[in-house]
Every structure is written in structure tokens, then in C-alpha cells.
Length: 375
Image (cartoon, rainbow, N blue to C red; front, side, top):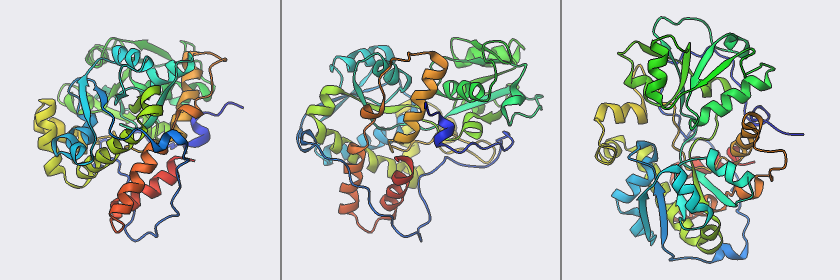
């Protein structure tokens, strides 16, 4: 039986209004909780090799959603961990073509592309997370109809941008509920980019739209408000991932682990020290501080829905693969994704930090989250 996201993630049917004061979804639990039993990584021979190899890692544009890696680079953590990494700015199509031929070792963006390549028989590996969630539902400020359950979306024309990961999960959620998403019950209108979606919403060409994190904040004074988020309706889902080429995974494994150790250290700074993180990300993204701070941490009136956890979240990734098959028809003959979703790099990196700092609660909290997210 094909399993969907709803098989893995509890669905909240709460009202979708989110203009509240919640901050970035975190990975830390209560400091008083007992440490869970540590989950050991499955070790194969190649996982004991490949230390000290150069890694070429792709980033897309100057996006602040890759904050942990940028912080780790700025603070010298990659050098401290003995990781020889070169970062390159690349576009998604170019990056995944290069990953498929092992001319690029890592790409910190994308998940739809990874799944599509895997489905077509071109192996690459999802080894960690860059972003969970991130898609906002935006409408005009006078929109006040409820949007809490699938039936509430009947009759609407919804704008979306194909590269936006949340639209896959959202459309699958509606289809699983029995709705015709091809114009029968709900109409979906693809547009070229987020700003085109906002303009189409303001002009009434679509009823509302699905946009990436922070577009609600950017357009809050332009007649747009956040009606909800895809996470509100569908639960946590993977957005951008850490994607590795087959050669990097099989021949540079311990270098990937060193990379992940540095990344986790950057993530800790991001989570625990915003006053260090924000200036670094303002400099990197060349965006205004209020925008960067709102997009990463939220404000009193705006929720930053992105979760920048490096956790592989393998359970959600496998469910997403099924969602993609549901709405994009990538093929009944597509191979199972399980063997290409690896938790071993992250697990070994987290174990390294837990052994190095056995009393650090932050690593214990991530360990607990790992057990929940990687069944």
C-alpha cells in the first residue's frame, strides 16, 4: 500500500490564521527530559573512509535559508573540523545535472529535483536537512473565509509557483481528501514567481496564493496578509535538503561527516545566538536587517514558518516522495526512495558532538528529535 504524508504526520485541523507571535519552529525540548537511548548509525565499509577529501558544495543565490552553513563558514567551523569545502553559487538545474554526474558533491537546496532524479534512476543521496516547511498561504487583507479543512478550499482558484515545495504537499493533501484538484473542485494556476503570485492575488486573478516564507512579511503593507501555512494543514514536510552525489556519498563519506559537524555547530549558533547570526546573514544576503530577522526568527505579528534543522527527517522525506508521485505522476515504476535517504552522515556527526560535549543539552535535544523524525 502506498503511504502518504498523512500516514506519517499528524494533520492539524485548527483554524489556519497564523498572524500571531510564534517564532521559528525549534528542535529543542525540555532541558529536564531524560536523554533518550541513542540510535546507532548503520555502518558500511565505505563509511569508514573518505576523510580529508575536498568537497564542492552548491548554494543558490544569497538566500538566508541556508543560515547554518553560512554561519559555520563565517565562524571558521569548517576549517576547525578539517573540512576542505568550496562553496559555489549555482542554479538548481545546473546543480542537479552536476550532482547526477558527480561533478558537484553537495547541494544545499532542492528536494523535488532530488526525488525526480531518483525516480528516473539517477542515484543521489539526501543526507540531511536545510529547511522544513516554509510555504505561506497569502490573500488580500479583506479575505476572511475559513481555510481549515480540505472542503474549505472548494471553488477557489489558487496561484502557485512550481518550484515551491509546499504546493506539492498541499495538492496531495487535497487529493487524498477526495477533491478534484484539476479544476473540478479546486483550480491551481501556476505563475512564474512569488511576486507575480502576489500581484495576481491583489488583482483578483487568483483567490489566494502559495508563496515562500517571508513574502507575507514583505507584502504586509501592500494589501496582503498571511491566511495560514501549509504546515498548519498538512504537518511538517521537507523543503530544501542536503543532497549528495553518489561519488561523494560512497567515496568521501567521512568528509561529509566533518561537513555536518561544522554545519551543526553553525545551527547551534543560529538557534541560540540570534545577535551573532543575524549580522552574518545580513552581510551574506545583502538584505535589510528587519527582513532577515523576520524571515529567520519572526516578529510579534509575523510567524517565520521555516525550520532550518539539519535533521534528515527521513520519515517525512519518504512521505514527500509519495506525495510527489501522487500529484506529478513521476511514474508507477519509480524505484523506492528509501535507500537514497540516508541518516548516517547526520547521525555520526551528532554522535561526534555528543561525545565531545556530553553535557550539552542542545545536542541531547537534537538526539531526541532525531529519534522522532527518523523511524
